[in-house]
Length: 234
Image 1 (tube, rainbow, N blue to C red):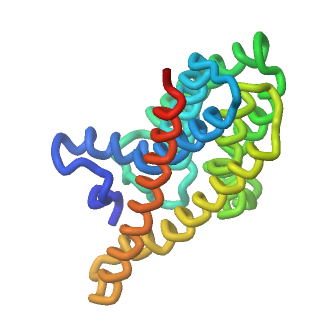
Image 2 (image 1 turned 90 degrees about the vertical axis):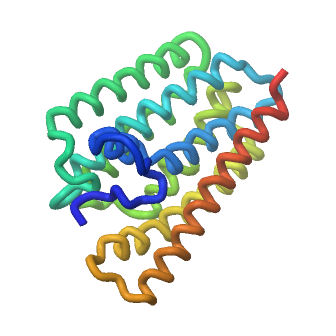
């Protein structure tokens, strides 16, 4: 398969470019990371709701659009969504979205939460090193994925509220890392099996099993994040 239009999160309706465009955003996994930022934000004693919105915008732009566009550019061979978007379009989408995310982040770093720069620097590095497979793919591993898209988003949400770290925030970040570990561990064999042109009955059963794991962890994380948000919303 040259692309992943059969994925469970890709719409079954609409033009091909629309379906591929939605798939490129990896909605359930983007939603997981956005939920991690909510979990971190809701751990603060006093919540600034504008900053909750800001961290959601930052990670949607940087991860949902930017990182996934870079992933399509950095993939060896044919990208995960085929050749439906040119490299020029992907580069424009990546640069514009990442610049937008950092414009929001820098504003808060300058005026409210200077400690956020540490996370902004780390996430910016992993954004390119992981997805473009710099240093011969050294950072394109499950461990770095867990840190960059599990642990750090929780800390970003918390730091943007408080400008500091705390033990509870670190523990929540560790929990998010474990959730990310489950997701990436199930995702890799799932993708390999989905590429098979003629999967056996055993392969089909494994695909369905991995798909249920991915659905469960992504929906569970999203419900947790939204639930905490509603618990604190006034």
